[in-house]
Amino acid sequence: MNKLFLMKNPELFQGEKYLNTTKTYFEGWYFKNTNNQNGISFIPGINIVQNDKKAFIQVITNNKSYFVDYNIKDFEYSFEPFCIKIGNNTFSKKGIHIDIKDVKQNIDIYGEVKYSNSKNINTNFLNPNIMGPFSYIPFMECNHAILSMQNKVDGQISINNKKLNFDNNVGYIEKDWGCSFPKSYIWCQGNCFQKTNASFMISIADIPFKLFSFTGIICVLMINNKEFKFTTYNDSKLLKYKVDNNFLDILLKKGSYYLNIKSTYDKGNKLAAPVKGKMSKEIFESISSLIKVTLKKDNTVIFSDTSANCGLEIVGK
Image (cartoon, rainbow, N blue to C red; front, side, top):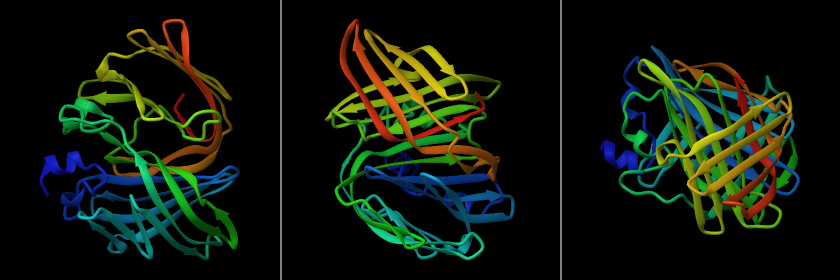
C-alpha cells in the first residue's frame, strides 16, 4: 500500500509490512461511546515483539477494564472500505459489532452501535493529521491520529446482561501506532459539553527525538464547526502545566488566544500500553472525568463550558 495514501488515511491499518517481520510494532484504535450516565471504550489492536505476534481488545467502562487476548490469525483488515476484525468483533468508522466472551474474566459483552455525522479536524498536505509535519518523520516512536472528533452513536452494548443504550448519543475515534508510548504524558478528551456543541482533545507528551527529547503538544477545540488548534508545530506555548494527586491545570497560548483546561480526576481503570512493541506498561484511564475548558482572545472569553464523561490519562507525572 502506498505510504502517502496511508498517511492521508490514517484510520487504515498502517502495519501490514510488519506482519511478516520480527520488528517491534504496535497499532491500536480507540472507539469511545458515551451517554448521559455511562461510557464504554474499545481498543482493538495488535502488538509484535520479535516472533511473538498477538491481537487484543481492551475494554474500558466507568468502573472496570478488561484485556482480552486473541491469536494474530484472528486479526483481519480491509483498506477499502476501512474495517478491522478481531475474532467475532468488527470495527469501522460506520460502527462496531461486539461479541466478546471470556470465561476467565467472567465477561460477556455483545451488541452493535452505528456511527454517523462524523466531524473531523481540518487537514491538508502539510498537516495530514493532528501531528502535522511530524506525520512525515519515519522514526517517531508513537504516531497519533484523530479519526473523529465527534460522531453520532446509535445502538446498544450489553455487559453481562446489563444493557447500555447509546441511541442519539456521542462518540469519538482516534488511534496510535509505532513501537512505544511516551514515557510520560497527559491525554484528555471530551465531547459532552453542557451548553455548547463542542468537542475537545489534548495530549502533552515527552517525545524522544533521536538524541534529545521535547515536549510535544497536540490540542483541538471544535466549537460547532469552528476549529482552534494549539500544537507544537503551529508555535503554541505551554504557559502552565500543573498536575498533582487529583487536579490538572493547563494553560496554552497561540497568538492572542489562551486556552485553559482544568480537571479533577480519579485514578481510573488499568490498561496496558506498549513498550518496544510489548504491551507491558501499566497505565490508568478514566472515562468519567469532568473537565472545564475556557478559551479567551486577549481578555475576552469566547468559550467556557464543562464536559462530563471525559477520557483522561495521566502517566509519569
